[in-house]
Image (cartoon, rainbow, N blue to C red; front, side, top):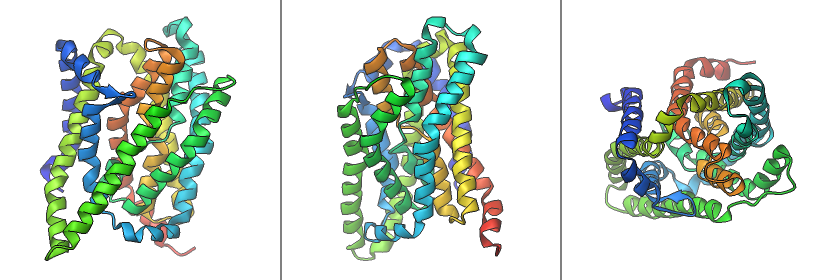
Length: 346
């Protein structure tokens, strides 16, 4: 592990501080960058996400994806946490914290909207960013890709009914342009590019060595893109964070609990059923992270740009990177404990 990777948490903290500060000092600049979007997908962030995930996808031998069938238990656990637990646990946490414990400190008119935003956030499992978290835990890249693709397919059919059920409304209008563009931009196109690029490198003389060198060169770029994404996300909301830090802090509490609860549940279930750590690690991360582009777009379309729902989903965006990095550290630190249970005969 390089010195840069070893102190990644420090760089993350510095980028958060820098993002908030720069967003407050130069709001017009960040507003202009934030306006560069198509279907609520921010283009500067999309470029950075590409730089993050291409090295991870380049590692995948796409001809061996059929072997993921060996990890059916990991797939089942992640699907269970993502679709049977996560949205409903967030609905419970939202009610407990926003309507009961924190109600006196929040604007009464926005209580329902805050809870709605939290539910929308939890009902959309993460896509591209999971490749970054999986890579940092030495997770199985083929499993990660397969699970993300499967979640995307399920999301097309399950996202709207689950959100409508939990919000108590007849139906919702899914921002299909955001969903389709995000899947194409973050999954389909990068997979095609990475597959062709990997094939070209492998077919060259000393192909495996060429691939290894290219991955070594791209790894620092991937982490720099992660930090730049963090700076941008906090810069976009720098003014809002400084103007209403207490509300943002309160909204972050149920999101933090939900992340650690669902990632812990997926991790412990994986250990209980003897799933390999390279599958259990991304399963825990996929089980906890969110597809924030879809969540933000849905909240805005249902409740408006300045609503509590939109703010709640934005808080989810802000906590995503630092919190998921903490989950990565926990998963890595507990690997020996996890492996002992897997290797010990029952």
